[in-house]
Amino acid sequence: MNGSTEKNSAPDLSNEERDILLDVGFADFDDRAATSILSDTDVRFTGSNDPGVEVLPLSEALRTYEFVQDLMFGLVSPDANEHIAMVAEHMHDPLGHFTWVKPGAKVALPVQNFTLLETPQARQFTHDITLIDEGAEVQMISGAAVPSQVHKGRHISVDECYMRKGSSCTSVNIEHWGVGMDTYSYGYARMEEGARSQSTSVMMAPVAMQLSQSTTHLDAHANAVSQAIIFAGNGTERVIETDTHLNGTGARSEDVSRMVSAGGTIINNARLVGAASGTNGFLGCDGLKLTNRGEITAVPALQAIAEGSMLSHEASVGMIDSDKLNYLMAAGIEEDLARNLIVQGFLSLESAAIPPQLRKRIVDLIAEAKSGGM
Amino acid sequence: MLKISDLRVAIGNKTILNGIDLTLPDGELHVLLGANGSGKSSLLATIMGLPPFKVTSGEILFDGTPIHDMDIHERTRLGIGMAYQRPPSLEGVSVRTFAHALGADAQLEREAAALDLAEFIDRDMNVGFSGGEIKRWEVLKLVLQDPLLLLFDEPESGVDLEHVTAIGDAIGRVVRTPDGKGRACSGLLITHTGLVLNHVSADRAYIMRDGRIIHSGDPAVLFKHVQTQGYTAPAT
Picture 1 (cartoon, chains in turn purple, yellow):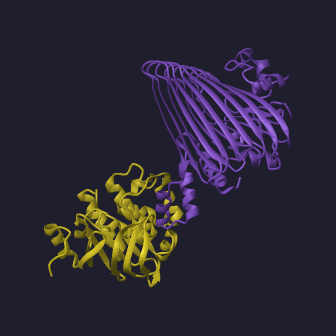
Picture 2 (tube, one colour):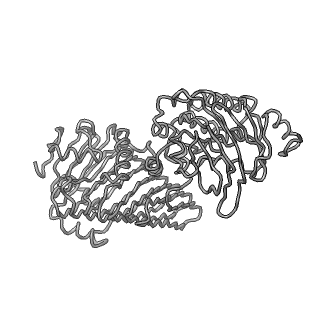
Picture 3 (cartoon, each protein chain N blue to C red):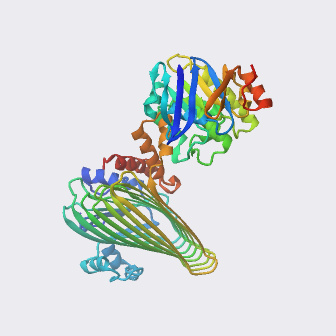
């Protein structure tokens, strides 16, 4: 079924594929409004159970809908950087998901999109486009995963998301790449007037190098709330860069990152730009180091351009608070368990922003990462 | 249960407890009275093994076993627990999660309700708690922990009068109820106001001053003395 699109039937997955997808939030086709699965260089499956959502391979979407070509590289130039140029130039037939939530659609079940890299030492270049049309409401679950035997490879992705006027999206993204892989993701979003987004990003599994850059532009009264939990064990380097522009009057954003280094390196550069009056933004970058190895760098930057833009940030990096540790130990909890509770608490996410089916999985991921079990 | 002999404790090079002697038998509740800085909280923290207090001489015996070289967890395994005066906030760690980690899920809801904390079960520990809520939670924490020796550091400070009764009753209940193995518990309690003593009967009181115990005797008599004469040794 390589490269094909199926409607209203379950994707044909091996047991191993199903297992690794379950790890990053996959659920059965019938439990999702729409599903899209990309593996290596093919879109393996797209299908929808909801007339309000259409998912297609990007190449098919370009042929089907004339407007998609205007969305592609509409938020970023194809030569914005070396990696994006590679994505643009390597795609004779563009590879990626196209997701369209139709105007006014209130999609009850989540839409899920997943990317697999199943061939060791593969080079994967993908481009995903999401259009959440005017007044539409949707939950999205996305993830990336590799089979256990794949530990080397490279993944480069470009993601463009258009949220039209008054639309709403709650999204969760879980990445579980191979331990020796290099991944580079570039995300761009445009939120039109009154659009609302609530995004959760989970970066817990080991990877050699991860660069995640995202740029979001908010028009008047748009509201973006994002939270990320980021873990780096020995041998993992993660560079997270976010750039949020509050362009319209009354736009609001809140961007919170919780980072834990257990010997790895995390660099978090976050910039918030208040370019219109009445805007309000917050950056929170907090880091916890569990050992003397590794490092965390948190750099929140605020740029107020317009009068009446209220921007604030909070950043902290440190070891586990000994007072908290002693308190739990004095309550009869062993030291290792006490440390786990503190780390899990530090990494805890605003659960209201996460589909109930995924909450326990994320808690388990945190515990696995802390114990080195991933 | 607890026997402290000629205990000297320092922080760095500064001696803060100087020659403490105290014996706490099974099933008794003793009370420490003293001004701020007299060493009461330092004594409790030293028994619990909390930093930065270092025993420089003397000994602390729990059931005849020296504990002053034990780490915190070893002391809790012996059966020592403490209600903090100012506990840290634990963001992201709910009361329910904590109870689960202690293996006390079964007791949580019943005991929380008894302390008017039923609505706190899914809240993060000490995050956004009022002063009184913190004190009630600290007592609930000890109930869940089920220790033999219960240390209470200012359990009624910051508690409104309505809840002092609940705190006092709960302290009385947890101290006077045998532990899970049927052994009588003991308690050592710091109080400034003495209000809690209206709700729980103590067996002995000590007046501390400048890192020393300067007097001991009947709690009601000593507290009355403190109210009129301050933290001084009554004339004999």
